[in-house]
Amino acid sequence: EPEVTQTPSHQVTQMGQEVILRCVPISNHLYFYWYRQILGQKVEFLVSFYNNEISEKSEIFDDQFSVERPDGSNFTLKIRSTKLEDSAMYFCASRVPGFYNEQFFGPGTRLTVL
Amino acid sequence: GESVGLHLPTLSVQEGDNSIINCAYSNSASDYFIWYKQESGKGPQFIIDIRSNMDKRQGQRVTVLLNKTVKHLSLQIAATQPGDSAVYFCAERVYYGGSQGNLIFGKGTKLSVKP
Image (cartoon, rainbow over all chains, first blue to last red; front, side, top):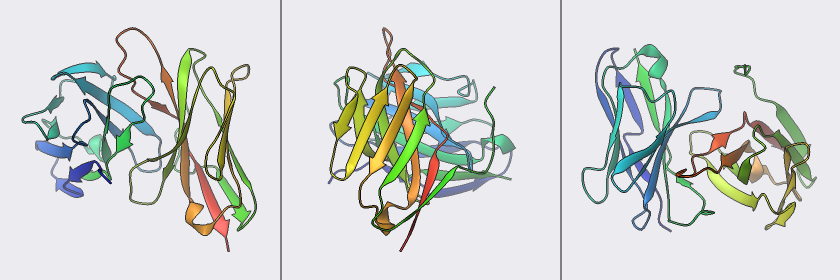
């Protein structure tokens, strides 16, 4: 069964460093999302991406964040200068076109900022 | 504002019993609702969904009930099994022009099944 994959599973970085989190959405999906989950808290929307551009973004997704689909398979989230409060699980999700189609989530990347 | 905490509501049930997990959603304009299951160290996994024009939907061992009057969603799991132990999140989607369907998640309920 096709699934969303994410790498790395765990990323440790120093405050102020740049990180890139990678996702490979399911191949026929066209809508892509990033969410994050701070330990013990709920999942929060960051950004949605369609047709090679950002569709929506939350207040969390400030100028330090960017997303890119560099090729036909990868979808990346870049944090330019990490802060301690960026420590969280980051989930990528994707879905097919169609208004009532579920989003499939990847296993997540745990980001730890020291 | 919302409360932020490290402690999730917990529901503890005996194996074989039925479980009911509740969720209050926030926006009366939400048109689509999903229940997700999240096991430790994994991403949310789709369980069942319901559109706002329905009040009940059944899947295999699971039923979702939607009460739009009080903005309440529930997930019923029949004959709960140890493998059902996880955190369960409800998620809502608010439709507006140009929306790509980003989800708003609830706080989650931890289901613990005792063998």
